[in-house]
Image (tube, rainbow, N blue to C red; front, side):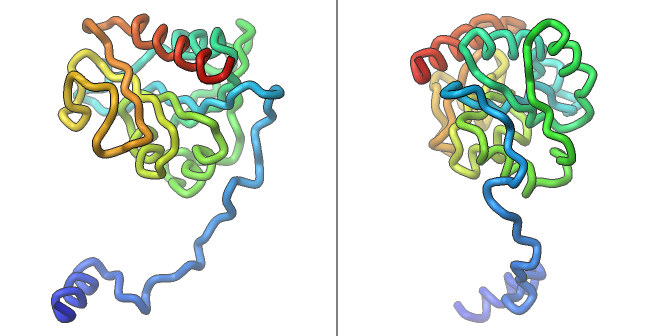
Length: 192
């Protein structure tokens, strides 16, 4: 048994002498998002760059933020990539979404994990943010397309892989209104 474990460590280049805590981050992050009293802080991600399935999974940002804004949530961007223009367009319409500066949400997973931990809830599509929040055991609500990836199974609103996840599914292709209405209702019930 001992030999096989050592072989596995060598195969993955993680011998105990090589493991270091030198890159540890402070938790929660030092830069926190300003909150409005008792309103929930919801981290959001709405887009995937997956070339095959992205167009089916992506939720229009305006629809997502309006649903969460109607439920009384404060929002912070967890989406990777440059979304400054989209967030500015929403601000012009009176929907405030925090976009903390200085965090690379795609290549800095420690920073993204810290940002997730600073929220009350994450609402996202099926992308890396959903999996990271679920792996952290953080409350995450996943918006799923009508024909989701196999790992989300069918006919259920929970995930055996991520006990902290709740699934909100499209009843028909292209219908994001139904799952977004369900998210709004559930959020209002949790944070009256």
